Amino acid sequence: MKFDNYTLTVLHRSPLFRALEPDQFNTLVNSAHLYTLNEGELLFRQGDPLKEVFVNIKGFMKLFRLTPNGDEKVVDIISPGSSFAEAVLFMGGRQFPVHAVALKPAVVVGINAAQYEHMLRSSVDLCFGMMGLMSRRMHWLLNEVDRLTLHNATFRLVIWLLEMRCSDPACNRIVLDVPKHVVASRLSIKPETFSRILKRLTSLKLIAVNDQHIELLDVGVLEEMIRVEL
Image 1 (cartoon, rainbow, N blue to C red):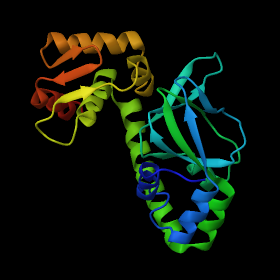
Image 2 (image 1 turned 30 degrees about the vertical axis):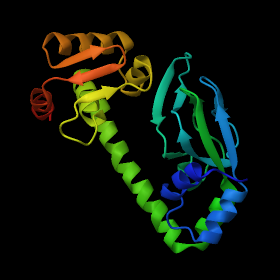
Image 3 (image 1 turned 180 degrees about the vertical axis):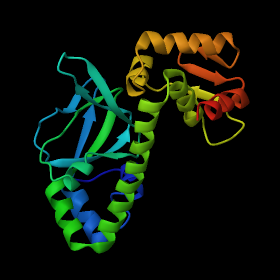
């Protein structure tokens, strides 16, 4: 399939493709599929057969599982440029362990999983690149386990706020690209608790909330809250 230059650039920058030779990259791209999803549209369901791994090009994707009583637990929010579902290949699985739905209109590229797995088996460099990606994700998951099991809801929300601000130290403004209840589920916080913490931080003049915009008014105090909890 022929992709536009922007899509090709995003794919080239993805850790999934950095170690590929040009002919390998072209082989995967030529057999790839482009999915244009409306808000709320499912890409795949938990239990569906794994036929593709994905790179998010535009918009946001939500990965979630359903609990036995039907509640939704957000596992991850996939931003543009990020890949997902490739870890299943290393787990020996052949089914998706989560649902994937577009939080907003999204564009996703699906890469043939069997082709990619074949290339992994024939390329040491590609395997090492994938191992590096998996190692970073494992480190991130271990930190997530610590946050969810060892720290309270306020800690989880404050550290998320600090991580979401842009890399420029002078930039203390956050734009919520996804609904607040989705962020709350991602942090394992009930929506009402999430709102209550935001109000408390606002009353302490540590943040200011205006619809989908959050301004960090006193980063120093917020960072001290994290240090004390740690």
